[in-house]
Image (cartoon, rainbow, N blue to C red):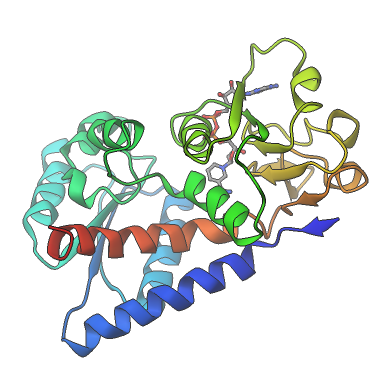
Amino acid sequence: MIELRGKAVADAHKAVLSERLAELQAKGIVLSLGILLVGDDKAAQMYARFMEKTAKNAGFGVELEHLAADASEDEVLAVIDRWNRANQIYGVLPLMPMPAHIDREKVIERLDPAKDIDGLTSRNIGLVSAGKGGFWPCTPRACMAILDYYKIPLAGKNVVVVGRSQVVGKPVALLLLEKQATVTICHSKTVDLKVHLQRADVVVAAAGRAHMITGDMLKPGATVIDVGINDLEGQTVGDVEYASAVEVAGAVTPVPGGVGSVTTVMLLENIYEAYYARNVDC
Ligand code: NAD
């Protein structure tokens, strides 16, 4: 059984990215990320600090705007507008949740799609779905980066994606389809998940249900990408019961230490992609 650790994947991507950034820095070019935080949500604040530190360490510039919980929707949209116009900003990250009086969809759709590095806007979703560029959301990209790094064959393979959310399930299914896999998407209304899983050479679990997939549900030798992050009696666990899965599967991502450790570097890569699309790829 191979443990598909995310760190090795993240390190390989970071090394390529830092070379590219060093080339730009030698020309005096610094790519900046705008992080917008509104209100007092603890998780959003922690993520903002984490992203600020990670992006700076990687060599990006960071502008962090923290608006008070009673900031008006117009004030929030004004920050987005300012960053949409700012040349040095290549990516904008509006952190959720925002206070209830702010319309989340309005904020997202106000983003310039060319700076929407988390692939949230309808335009980006349309572009990636049509295979016409745009930014893929980071978690699906992280799944694909792991499969690619560990050279897991996909063409002609049966792949089951568990979960159909807009940020994980649907986009990862499309990416797998592009790699010529035969993709089945299962969800909360799927009848007899086990029947589907037992035919799967590759499973991507993204349901957000602790330990819902156990070893007896898997095909022997299957590759399992566990996207789930769940709290189970104070412990962070995936959607896959790791202990029983490793007895059957050929390769499994651990939680934590799997998909989650690759997503941030995917976001940073998208900032570079935004630079490339604006300045080079014309
Ligand atoms: P979501 O709640 O938006 O979607 C969950 C999906 O799972 C739905 O489509 C639902 O139909 C399906 N589902 C729920 N119960 C099911 C069941 N019993 N059987 C089959 N399908 C079922 O969640 P999301 O935002 O897509 O996130 C999914 C999980 O991935 C969560 O645990 C989340 O924390 C995690 N996540 C991890 C990362 C990462 O970086 N590792 C990033 C994003 C999300």
